[in-house]
Length: 165
Image (cartoon, rainbow, N blue to C red; front, side, top):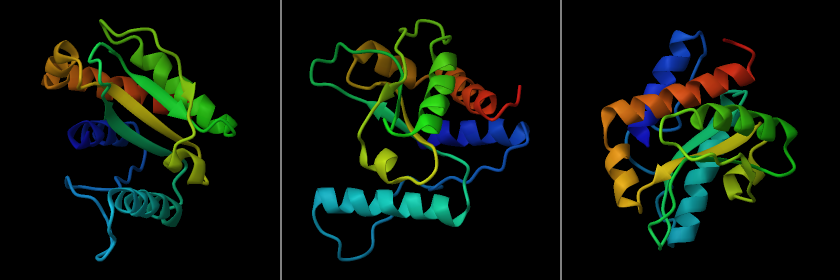
């Protein structure tokens, strides 16, 4: 996730965007003393949202890798909060580019009632770049050439949303 986020950042900066990553290293931002998996996760998400607000971000884009118990699902999907019209527009713009990646399924952007999406005051999306629970897709996700294709698709979707070619 972090490696692809850095690739997306580089591509968008080359297009003239100012990009702020909520983390530069593979660590969570949880205050000392916060206990419990759910509390720690929520504290980390609150940090990310607060940073986006502090930096006056125009959008909050969270990159993830998905998993299911069956291991059969494949493909990227982008989620937005169902009450956010701009979140939906951003998600659709990104998803439109992701489905152009070779061998990608044809999923559409979907509403999701996830904490990050619900609490973000700016348009926010969660981009699930693929399923690590699917062995074939997991093998592709580890390949630099595939990561580059996904990063290019996300960056192009973001640029299109903001009206840049």
